Image (cartoon, rainbow over all chains, first blue to last red; front, side, top):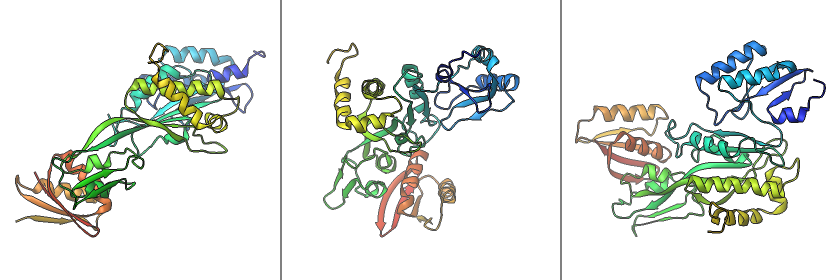
Length: 297
Length: 71
């Protein structure tokens, strides 16, 4: 027991508490969703091996604190047989957070929990130079705070003006939160300035004649965000990604770039600042052009 | 005669409740003019669309929008 490697335990989601010999066991939760069966298992384990307390973490995770060192493997097995796996900590890809998404939230533009599941399958727990957090907001309201993650994803919709039935009422211009639309009621023209557009879809949802249409729906990517002692906001990288496969490639390219360029104890944003966001954008472009077999398309 | 509902002095959620209640009282083909502030435009317009009401006319006077709806 004295030979325990605390770093390895930590990577496996078992964190030493302030009190000697006790551990807080982090669980694998994706997008903040759990089944009632999993919840039952967690309650049972907390009562049997902990002190009945359950902690909700800052990033939609769950930890069961006050587990004795000698019970760690029993806890792991008990959780596993009840459909719950133990989480990760240390220099790994952490919990994928997500909002409720469009199946629950009327504002949602994408099914964030489904996407969280896909990203989780590809990346969760994988080793990286330093902790790496991924969060998914279903729309521009950004409940998950995409920009404070190493990689943040935000649901987005690109508007397209169709002049045929446009009543030139000017609602699109009025509702645009960033004033990216000029609706010229005299010349009967509507212009969208895409460099300003935040792809929120307010103009599409408000247009009384359905003349603001959905050109494409997808995701925006933000890289290099973090919180902690020195918070920084992730920067938007690339354009709108409209397919899951492109998004997976983009997240994969971010992880790969971090592995190639990152240093221990340095977050993705730090590596990007040091190496250059432009270098990363170039790397990402190349990766997106690659065919799935790794050859250039 | 066209009915009129001024919700410029209302805030969420009473604003929606008033529009919804008035729309429910409306008979098919009857029109309602809703007068609202620009800040509520997006929420009211998208709610009317989701409920399946038809917007016939929109006009603007300063900060006030007049939206004519029917069902």
